[in-house]
Amino acid sequence: MPAVESPRALSPSTPLRKIVTGLALFLLICVVAVAGYMLAGWRLDDAIYMVIITIFGVGYGEVHPVESPSLRALTITVIIAGYGSVIYTIGGCMQMLIDGEINKALGARRMTKGIERLSGHTIICGVGRLGTILARELDAADKPFVLIDSDMEKLRDAEARGFLFIHGDASEEEILEQAGIGRAATVASVLSHDATNVFVTITARSMNPDVVIIARGENPKTEKKLLGSGANQVVLPTAIGAVKVAQLIIRPTAENMLEQIQQQSSMIDDLGQMGLRFDELVVQADSWLVEKRISDIELHSNHGFLIVGMRGSDGTHQLNPPPTTKLHAGDVVIILGHQDDIPELADRFTAKPAKMTYRGVST
Image (cartoon, rainbow, N blue to C red; front, side, top):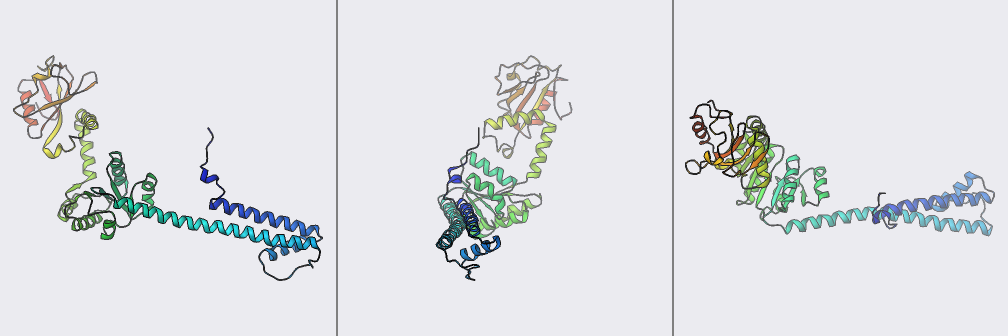
């Protein structure tokens, strides 16, 4: 299917089209005028010279006398048409400049109005990789936010997506005021430099004591400084990434199952803060649990363990398996429980010799 150009690109009223049309008319007039003077018996260089001084009104005098009615008519036509094409071209240039400034001013005005209407929004300070992903996630969740960054190039993508943004230093009170810090619910300072995040945290906290501040820290030593500066939460991307990789190595089944569960529910985002953890138990071939039901190992009262999923020996996954599900050798059971109680649960299973092994715990 051939590409279709926008109506504005084809419109003759656009500044660029005016400039191109004006230049084409000017060249055409010059060629026709030169040809006319040459037909009157003038040399090429004399004809070109005559056209130039006529159009631009230099007034050095004619190369040859212009006495015949045809030459005078040609000269008058060159003056009128030449001036017209030049004015038309200059008008296109001026329109391009004026339209650009007007559109910029209107765009800034719309941006300001949009931010002024926000309340309970998030202010994202920093539009790097982390800030960009955060903006997309908030946009997908239909949560209002404003982006702040001092690098206009990083804001181009936000502008193309229609996001609200402010070009400036997020550590300055004036910029945060423009972003509506007094009405904001959350400030996410995710700049790449820890010192800048500290400055942003201090400024934001002084301007709004009630706002929730989530700050990024690259150096673990900065976490205490950020918390002392007023941050409610500190995120260490490097540490989080390292822990995630370690969990994928140590407990691959549990982590994969957890990822599936997280895609279906948002209620477990803060499990780690509540002291809960997902882990996995492997059913061995000589375990007493072979051919037993899930209900035989699920504990509801003493420790509050919950079996949230399992991976069968054939590689199939099942979330929230029913209590009547039978276990087979090689099955992996995913449990949710308190971090301090998981080793005790492993000991309960290892009380029967060679019945069940807990990955990572000697039996």
